[in-house]
Image 1 (cartoon, rainbow, N blue to C red):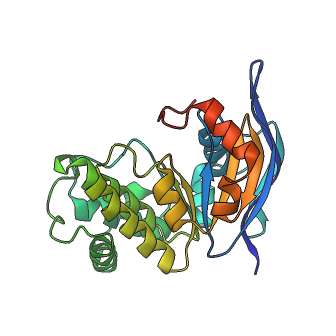
Image 2: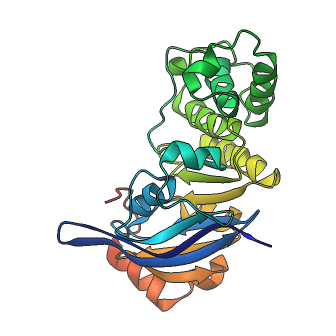
Length: 255
């Protein structure tokens, strides 16, 4: 099975700080991988590099065998990458249905704004309605996105990412700020995404849920990979345990 996402010796420095120090890994199509590590490990920086929000000082990023290191975020989305943010970013004055339909029309036009101006958007709205139901938001279609509680807004973020028909979806702390009930609903939505054959990379501090749903863990510490493999084996590694104990596992801040 070919690699959906591959990083080769990716590194970036901010001033005198080596945020990511030469990370290499390959994720196969359809896998469900947790990217974890203590505070300041470099997870968010690495996700931004994969998404095209940051350009690495060296190394390469490949999507489905294509080198996208020099491509911007929009080009990577067209190649099948989607990203959800820890801080949700819907169009708050638009309805839930319009938010998702906007994403569903992304591949059919040169920009999301032109997608919104389609005169005949029945296909986009039909697909949007299906996705909204899939992530457990049926009945909210006509509500303004900004009126949703945080749990539903987080699921809307997943729906918007799913609407662009991704091959790989990066989820940046999708459970942050949620209570147990809402976190469970969000996990169900994420599991439904993966069930469609989409490769999922999950950055999350909720280790209980990460251990439950991920097939593989990649652990970062000080910008380097210190663990990679089956979740229970990785978490039993003394180096991983030491990194978490020293990094303050209970904290939710990311540097």
